[in-house]
Image 1 (cartoon, rainbow, N blue to C red):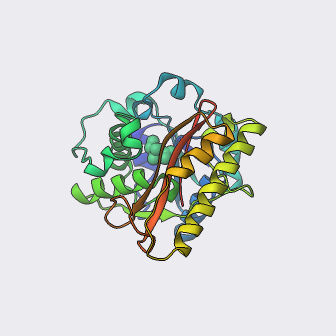
Image 2: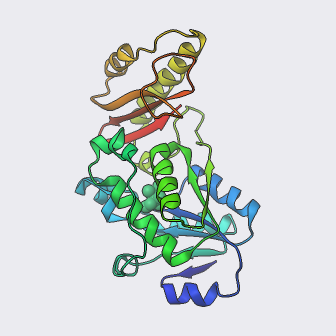
Image 3: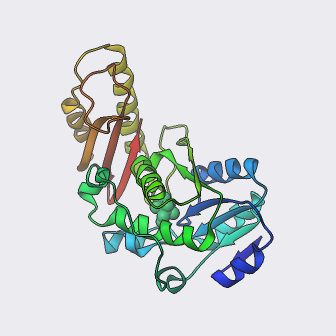
Length: 272
Ligand code: PAF
C-alpha cells in the first residue's frame, strides 16, 4: 500500500490512473469502513482511502481530543483489505489553499445534528470539498448512518457541478444492533449494553408504527423509555419523511426514525 502525504505525490502516482474509488475517513477504522472499502474495491481495483481527522468539524474540544486515533491499526486493516493507496495529509496540505468551489449548505443542515452541533456540517463540507478538489475521484463511498452528512454532500456536489459520483452504503451493525462507529471505541461494556437497548427500542418502535397503518406517529413516550434506561441526554428522536425531510406525521409515509443521544460522554447517532 502506498501512503501518500502530499498533493504532488498524488498527482505523480495517479497521472496514469483513469478511474478510482475514494473512501474518506477520519481513521478509527471499523467494520462499517470495511464494508465501504470492500464495496469500493468491487467496482474498481484502485481504491484510495483517506485518513484525516478534520478539526473543523468538531464543535467540542473534548470530542476532538478523545476521537479515536490508531494509525498503526488502521494501516493493518487497510493492508488486510488490499487497499492500494492511503492519503494521509497534514492540516496545511488540506486547508492552506484557496478552493475553486464555494461551500453550499442546504437548509436541511439546520435540522437534526445541525441544531446541536453548530458549524459541524460546514466543517464537513469544507474538508470534503477540499479532498475532492485535490483528488477528483470518480466515485466516493459514504455510509447511510450519517444520513444528513450524505444528503448535504450530495447537494453540495450537485450545486458545484462536481463530477464525483456518490455511492451510499448501508449501515453495518453488530449483533447487538449497534451501528459501527469510531466513537464506539470510547464505550465500555456497560455503555455498549445500554446503547444496544436504545437501538432495540428504536427499531421495535419503527416496526410497531409501520404495523399501525395510517395512524399518527407519536414518539414522545420513546424518549421517556430511553431516559428510564439511564440515558442522561438525548439531542433528538424524530421521524422524518425521507423525501420531504419534514416531520413524518402518519405511519404510511416513507420515514426513518433519526436519533442522537449520549451514553456517558459519547454521542451516538443512527437512523432506522
Ligand atoms: O464521516 C466521516 O468520517 C467524516 O465526516 C468525513 C466524511 C471523512 C469528513 O471528514
